[in-house]
Image 1 (cartoon, chains in turn yellow, green):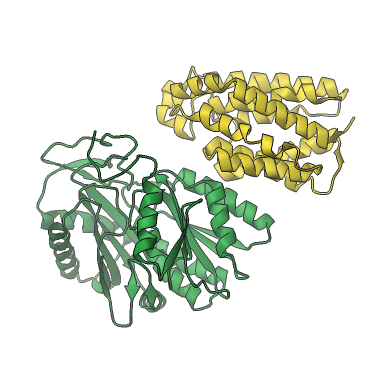
Image 2 (cartoon, chains in turn blue, orange; image 1 turned 30 degrees about the horizontal axis):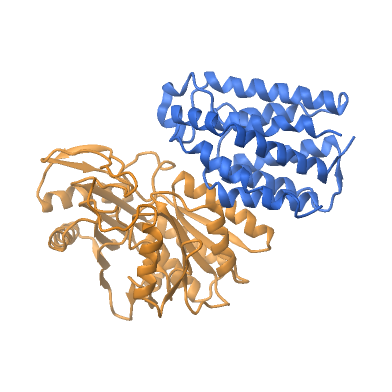
Length: 203
Length: 337
């Protein structure tokens, strides 16, 4: 099993569907510990992906264009970091037509590196890194791809839920200090929704 | 509702920039899609210098675009970082073989977006460097300190270095030297109000002054009782002098400014008091600016910044510049905006 351009097209398409479907939920979560514009903003970014999804058959170019489109349309912190993450994933897969599971893991590791570098956050600060880390760590070639991805998604879901008991120490939610505890991080929820569709993209 | 001379909230940044380029068509031009202000007649053989951030700080930053200063200013919504793609567009537009230096202030959103844009530009083969200012003495922790007025002096001095044809590492070194040797502090007599929010950012009693304010209408670090101008000048200057550790005989550049809603009369009285007090301390003023450079919408208040200078900084500070606000000609040490 390898991951080709159709897999990434499907991944972005599913992510877009999930985010748009959950726009209201994301806005509600953001109104608890943010400034309530998250759902609308990020949904607008993913909606714009329609324009670029079928514009290329190169994996790197697809990710590059998708990342830049999201940055253009959803200019908040999440849009900027997620967009930069896609561009970084594209950058290291230049020239490749198909990727192995191992290469997919390297792509997500690169994504994490980029997000940490730009945003300055670390794991455990109640951000979407708490979803991205467990997901990536579980992309081990120990079983069939489907099993591995399901396991990684399970870990991502647990990571998302773990943000509920964390206190935000970076970003706007950190202004809420101790009272950010008890609320899921909207960015972590969005990241889980984005990854969730992956399992429908295996042929 | 708070009365303001506006048309439609949400349109104020573009309309303001349209006004700016209308007034200085010989110096600057506007990309209305991205709200980027560009210098006209850009040189191909120099390091390009850009800056950006939220609007509401006029005349920053568009007012400093032109010969001898900035090649581009990128305007976000009021008190909001510009987007990555706005910045990326600016970098691509002004890029030269010598590279693009982003000179920004220490705010989370600005840092994320400039760094992300620089990454995109590097993919295109553009050489980029970043300098972040943190000159505000109000906060103790240096890492947390916000960028304020010294950023504008760094724009001027690094801008002159770029104009002389220096390489990007040199221009960056000079910008960093300015930031390390400069400090700023601000006070507010009244809060300010973001057009879209329609309310004041904090409340102050009639006899109170907010000390150690940022530039976004956020409350300061301390509330003090109202004092006359000369006493206020002393309190603010003492804070700067102590933090920067300047001593009798040291040479400095001084910037005294209102915060947007301060009458000219008060700015000049306060400038006089700051200069007299600096003199009494035995500090030698090489040059000074008085007026408005980095404001907070309609806030009534004042900021003082001092920069310790050496021969290199003095030479570059006095080098020619031609922008909407800063027009430096030989022998003109004082600017009033």
